[in-house]
Amino acid sequence: MEKFANKKIVLAVSGGIAAYKAADVASWLTKNGAQVHCVLTKAAAEFVSPLVLQSLTGYPVVQDEFVTGPGWGIVHIELAAGADLLAVIPATANIIAKIAAGIADDALTSTVLAATCPLFMAPAMNTHMYENPATQQNLQILRGRGWQIMPPDNGRLACGAVGQGKLPAVEAIELELEQLLLAATAEPGRRDLAGKRVLVTAGPTTEPIDPVRYISNRSSGKMGYAVATRAAERGAEVLLVSGPTALQPPDGVRFVQVESACQMREAVLAEYAACDVVIMAAAVADYRVAEPADHKIKKTGDNQEMTLRLLRNPDILQELGEAKQQQFLVGFAAETHNLEEYAKGKLAAKHADLLVANDVSRADAGFDVDTNQIIIFAADGGRQTYPLTTKLAAADYILDAVAARINI
Ligand code: C5P
Image 1 (cartoon, protein in one colour):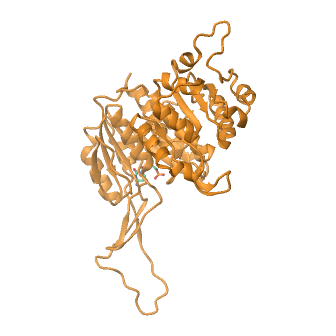
Image 2 (tube, helix red, strand yellow; image 1 turned 30 degrees about the horizontal axis):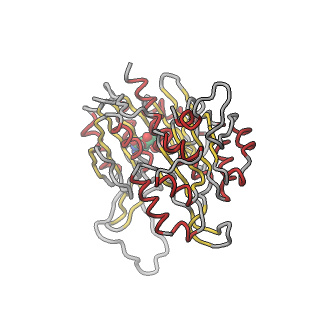
Image 3 (tube, protein in one colour; image 1 turned 30 degrees about the vertical axis):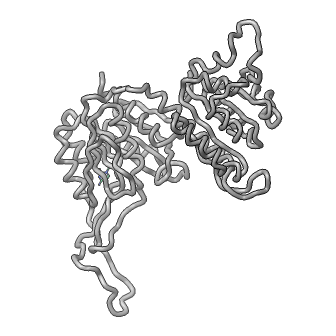
């Protein structure tokens, strides 16, 4: 499946030294199925060859608003029409100022003025130019008009100075673009989960040792919070039961804070009967301390060892699976090896309807990162591998798989 099939993207390149990096972005978008139309300023064409962009995208590169040819209309209007995203990469101080002022004196600025799609820019320039109040005020104006502006990185700039102004890494830009494109995909106002009660668990659990210490794990809660966020945006009535995380509860979601696995179990069971969908994204601790102390445990004498006796925690998902009525159950499997085998085993053992598996040994998937690469196994035999993507987009993939099965 190509992530950006049927997407039309206008890649606007202005004339900074970082312009050559636009070629990587153009190539990545094209490889993922997008139609990429590049429009360049005169200066940009000095830094990156239009022929490179044309060869990578397969479309003619627009540099002149007065080009004509058989079948060509007014080029900047045609470029802007029906675009899913317009991205200015890199955006120089000059182009930012012109766009803020509404100037349309070349193909790029005319296209920007004619665009009605989501707008993105990645400014890149010398630190003093970036920090200049003129540039900062222009960026502020653009933000106010709904532009998504990615701040430049700190680092060594082409001019030799060190400071803020560097174009962010291409991979970081790609992630931003992906988020915008996929957010734009979920047709605004899609409410395919309206009327559904969805319970989501998220985060780690903490299992107390004494009043100041606990055992826990590295779950950040980001995946579960993303699922709760998107489920609410898609119309569901969402209850988020969360272990301790550093995240803000999403808007429009009923929120219950818990700490231990036993507390999570109670909170979930209290709501289970009324739920249509339960998505167990929490990393529930498998064991708890058998006898947590009610006072802080002190170092005693010269004792060099201490032993904690652990008890197995209840398996919440399994319990839900065994008591299942109308509920549609989704479990997660974070594995470092034998992903498929363990995931399928859990799907069956826990009587889940879907199991979302991810390989947490990858640096770009799993704990505490903003991206994830998931495979969904279904009790009906379905199996789908998804591309590496943001956790919000992964949440949409999961909810798509749920919606396809409950809305029949
Ligand atoms: O068996 P394992 O812990 O690997 O299974 C992971 C799935 O089971 C996750 O969906 C997790 O939320 C859920 N789980 C649970 N109760 C536990 C342990 C895991 O509900 N005690």
